[in-house]
Amino acid sequence: MSTVYLEVAGLKAAYGDIQVLHGIDFSVDEGQIAVILGANGAGKTTTLRALCAMVSTEGSIRLAGEELAGHRTADIVRRGVAHVPQGRGTFPELSVEENLMAGAYVRSDAEVRADIKQWYETFPVLGERRTQAAGSLSGGEQQMLAIARALMLRPSLLLLDEPSLGLAPMITRALFEQLTAINADAGTTMLVVEQNAALALGVADVAYVLEAGEMALSGPADELAADDNVRRAYLGY
Amino acid sequence: MVVLASVLGVFDISLDKLSNGELWLAQFFRGLSDGATYASVALALVMIYKSTGFINFAQGSLALLGVYLAYIFSVEQGLPVALAVACAMVASAVVAAFIERVFIRPFPPDHVLPLVIVTLGLLLIIDSAVGIVWGFRTRSLPSMFPSGAPIEWGIAQLTWRTIGNLGTVFAVVGLLYLLLSRTKVGLAFRAVSSNLESARLVGIRVGPTLGFGWALAAAIGTLGGALVVPDLLLEPSIMLRVLIFSLAAAALGGLDSLVGAVIGGLVVGLARNLLVTFLDLSELALATAVAVILVVLLVRPTGLFGSTTVERV
Image (tube, rainbow over the protein chains, first blue to last red):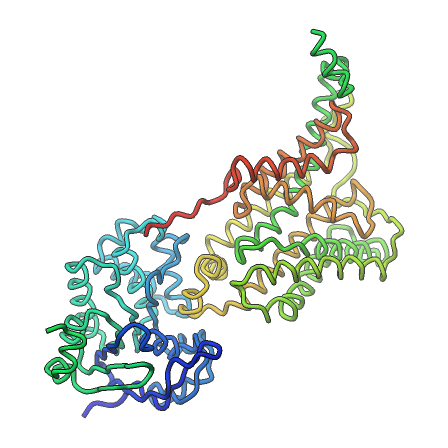
């Protein structure tokens, strides 16, 4: 039995007066990929934002046994949580290389350069465009950059919000292959919010289904993929 | 010919003046000197604009406070002027960091309008406070640079002060460039201005980064004020006038470009001196600054060197 790495209990989140999450519980084991499915407005993005203290929350968020709730975003990042927000997670005015340097902002070790080189090998198009402004990259290239930027932290937990949004199906598949490879190589625990349920369930170990701010279903990804309700609602067959 | 003569008549332009090469050169040097001072305050405006996306109207007031401190340190305490200015730069940076922490940070950094209103309020408060503490009597602050002129050509003089002002501005812009492009704090600064949310998500502490920007801008503004004031006299409204020329300089340069601020400053300085001298428009000196702002906004809102945001969708 693997150890629980992220454990969330009774998580509530609100934007002003509007309650989005009504006390959800979920957990991700160390080295696993977890996926959160759900319709638009179910609270998937809010769940990820809540983990990084980017929305006001109540409840408990434990990372490797330590409570994160009450900490600021910058401190949560220092505990190894990297977050790729939906859409543009890059610094458009900064060059590709500067984006990667910024990703390593909290690191002070000597291997930052080597890591940048490594991501240029993984995503060669980023290496070709290292001096270009990130804002001039295509949507797919920016998504790669945002993910590489997040990985520059050498995170222990990677949060990905709709990584496939706006990408061509082929690029999306390649991206998910990269993510599973990174998960296998570095043992990075991942929590992915994804509209493309078939693809996400294919790579995930465990899956959760959010409905209107409540956790409706949870279980191993292959079991959920076989569930009739999940298939009808999210897989469309 | 009649038309030309009447135009010249309206503006009181004398052909004697226009053909006087020494006068042109003299005003050219004066323009450079003034331009350097506008540029230095414009640099402070650009620093804040780059990080926050708004114009800090209290910038001139922080510089005013700094210059009064330089006056206290040099004239009253007897420190050498350059040292007094350096101390005043540090002191104004501390005050600016305090003001940022207390009055600016409570507001979300991505809501610009309330922040602009706060800086306008700070302008009024600081200017009045300076008036209450030090009075409205004019004082003179000596220049950091020696008097005299190494190059003279009739009435045209390239003074040590002009050379010093220009040298200071180029040194400041060079150091700022290195700070922003080569250091970690510079990277944080640019990351915050580029994407606030992603800056938080890479672990940058946004508040202290912006506070650092305020402190740095105040120090630069104080240095700019210390260049301006020896040409004029020190009194509580002095920086308000400089601020308008510096705003014109920053707008012309493109608001987010350091090099643009310097070139904008020099152009505004030259335009002001040449127009005032050859068109006898001394009453309209301030209007030339406003005219520059208006023309830039109409013709090229991004200024000469401002970045047009590149973004593919």
